[in-house]
Image (cartoon, rainbow, N blue to C red; front, side, top):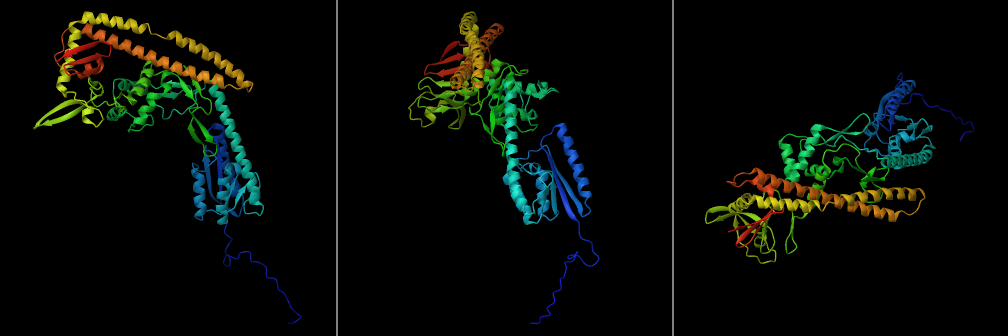
Length: 522
């Protein structure tokens, strides 16, 4: 080895990757911006950010604009609905972007997990993210340590914001302010003051649904009828589902009331909402807007919804659900075992006929029943006879109907309802005092729940009373107007007047909805 060792330092070339005379390629820089609401002020902020980043990138001679990715009015707590953000990440993975700049970590993501996931994904592609406000470049040695801290703070900020929104909503609920999306809500829209107003043509559709349901139509039959007439549902779709009908029939907003906080958010990050089964307070606002459906009609529908779940319970305990396929479904009852009759197509020695038979004879119910089989035409004639008997002795039946109305009126419960409303008002004042003093309000809460249940029951009873009065009045009108006997069976008249037909060996007992009963011998 020689002592005259000589070391020559060779400096790096400025354009190592370029051929002689080629310029260094510019850094393709993209900007991501987001505003968190759709208010006018935030929309202005959105436009400002786009202008800022366009100018900011163009002012760097070594940079070239790779695109502005902007999500307007979308939450930052997760990335599922941030279309532009996701498109930007895809472009990074496709090699179209060398660097991302954004205003702050809270604009990029408020969820620590999402934030770090994407930063690491980009680091693997050697793509830095620069946060202006925090002055952090994710490819710096200190970048990820600072980023973890800042992202955690951003998550806390989002949690705090979510809590503030919750408190704000609860305050508005307490003031009776109704907030919900009318975009898919049939019958109402909002005016310039964000108050609910009726849309007349849509209100007629809602009224039709309630009317047809009380007339005996099933939810499926109502849905198919609306489709056949080309009527669109609340979302503007031609297809109606039974769930659409069910929601309309159960929605208290159609009677000018509103139950607020039916659901609540369980996770501020995922925004997951669940049904409120008493975990957080609810607020029932009465007379908050114009009604589409009368309260008594709504209550009749609620009772009918319950009734149709189990129309008839057989002696062996088996339940029969509602059917609207035939006017006689569930109204023909066996006088021997108490079960319902079912429609059967018979082919006896080549002779076809339609008969009704006790289901205890058709199914293995564990009960022996030898009730007779009845021709459908026989039942039709029995009903014509029963109606004509009331017409022949109309004076006697009209007296009975007047007595029935007097009995119904005597059961009125308006005073009880007034007493409940007064007590509920007192309890609201008491509840407010207990809440401000952090005292235990469980006892008061239990009484409020109990009184609301009692009130609901009384309202249903009143609705049933009103319906019975209407049916008695309907029967009276029919008897007064019908001058001659029925010549033939009328299905619509039977649906309107008849409640039940019990089949015995030697007779039929026909019960009218008005409370009148007629025996028809055979």
